[in-house]
Image 1: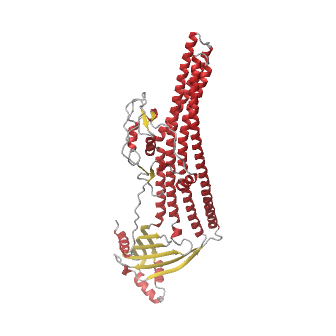
Image 2: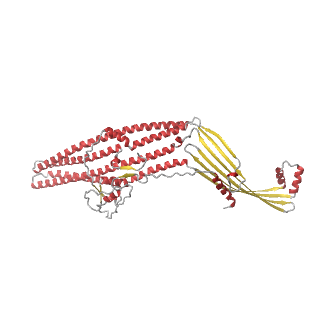
Image 3: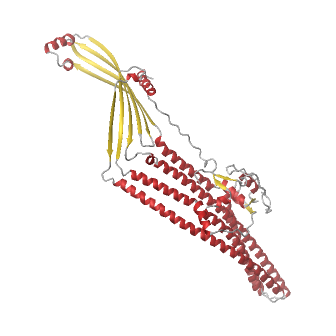
Length: 603
């Protein structure tokens, strides 16, 4: 380093201890959303994956997987890798509980949604950072060179300018003595200036701004002269000089109208905190929807399996009826035309079985997509479900209590109230903008020149100060008025949105209750219908054996029984899904599963 630049470094380090600059430290709060956003006392998720692959390579036995000790969902799932080839699909066995817990741990869409609260957390930190200390440091080294060639006339003029009040006789005598034999002079100046500035500013939540500025400069100048005389002789002269100075200033600015007070200056921070809380509620709402979607997909898959089973049994009955028809034709008890009805019915039932298998495959893909188990050859797997559908006898409860629970628990309603509070902050902020900007300021400044290093406070001689007010306001203030009016209208919109959402919630809850009651009555009707259709089919089959009925009547009775069975199992699944919809409408689905959001932002 050039030694001429060292003094400025000493200057800065010498001035810093003379001023008290408090440090700022704000510990970053750990986000519980990062560390595992769900807590549950349900079965350990790792066991779910192991149970799902426990019967890999075997035909499904339909047995319920064994349980394990409770654990948090944040535990990483470990699944044994399969070694079988693609020619032998493997079975994954799930209960309803297994499916829900595995989806909460492995669902890819949920992993995407978990990031949103973390992003909102960074916005809070960004807004808080506006109240941090803002240091600024500038160091500069400048070097200049200036040369000039002066004739005797120029030298005389420069000397006269240097002594303008000297009498002519004395000046002439002085000039002839010292410069009479000078023909010309070549002057060269070299200057190196090292300087630096350190500033530190801090905005407080009250609106007060404090600014500290420290500046220092050190200059080193070298001057050389080469004088040519009339007798061809030359004379060289050189000189050097150095100067140093420093300044320190402290400015305090306090808003008196616009921008005054913690309430207005913390508005943006509070809005970011509301956004963070809204993001947490959005995550909760997504988790509720995910749990509901997993359950509905599970029951849709159960229904698809039941429908396939019913269709296959119907096909089996049709094929058996066709064989009986062939036997009767062989014995001459029926006309050959009866075989056409039997063959047509078998072909129709085969088509329905094909459709049922296709629907089952699609439901399986949807189910595996939601759960995303950590296994090889995921899309070639076949699924066995161990929780059978059964009618729910649970009492619903009074309508007023259901709606009151929904008002307390709905995540989207909580978001609406948070948006209203954000609107209140925006009203405060824009109303503040209607006032003129009136600031009080005071500046203290001290200078030091010709100082020696290191520098102390005693080197600063004298101090200056400035005190005053500054006032500013746009003419008409149209922009601020428009912002204030927009904020008021937005708040009114949030109020109306809350009332609209409350009304929608009431309708959703009432419709869910109506659907549950419909399914309950439908189950009773379908059970009675299925029982009657079974008896009807037995009668038609017996009449056919006695030669008193036709294939057409038997197949019609068989179709009626198949539709009755499908209607019964569909009604049961619809009732289960209706109860799920009711819990979603109330916002209590997670409580039903003992699942809690670990974020402290959610009440």
